[in-house]
Image (cartoon, rainbow, N blue to C red; front, side, top):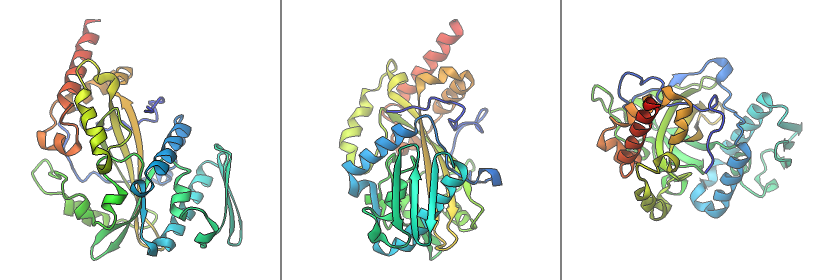
Length: 324
């Protein structure tokens, strides 16, 4: 399991919760013009890409799903990722366009994709699946109709209780139906967030940060619960520092200009609890928030079986540092 080695690139999730408890909220915020490009090359890039591709090969139906009518959206997605990557990292990615004949080169991996733009028969994979394998993010396209969003294409390798195979075709409300979306004043938030997403316009993406705890796992999808479920019971207050990782999703919500779909981009990062000592202010803030997580939220996030052990580990770690 990889971990973030450059903490300056790690998105600490509790920045706004230093003196209050964490609860779900409609925390989508606008991005400044210099931050709308979500591309990020981290020290873990090659490890992430290798593992992402392995999981796509191991469980292709589980990790990637699409409807046949999504090809036009898929090519729009290909164009977006190529433009963003070549604009931000011209030293790592390049593209040559000769009419509809495109050649995309990933210089980090030494790989080239040559295809006829708009012609899926020129590729061995679907366009969305092909280009997504060059970036460590997970991607979902949700189509906007009837004042809701419906999942129609998804490539996901670092899932947290989500599966393209399971969720394809579901609406935003159906996917988030189990979520205990309750604000600090007790207001249901699922519909509020859905309505907020409807206001996103092309060129003005929104972002938010989500988090979870993972018990020595890259992902926890529905199809492999028989494997990762029992693993959670192995966590103790003694080994939680190594086994339990703070899993952070930095999310982007982008309105596609031609299809009007919403692209969900997830940049998933992992940090073992023991590495929180490298940022003492993070350690205490994480402990404070985890110690106050309500039971219903811990159950939903899947961390209830090992949350008490994780909190105890952090408390012991803080106390040991004070003694020193």
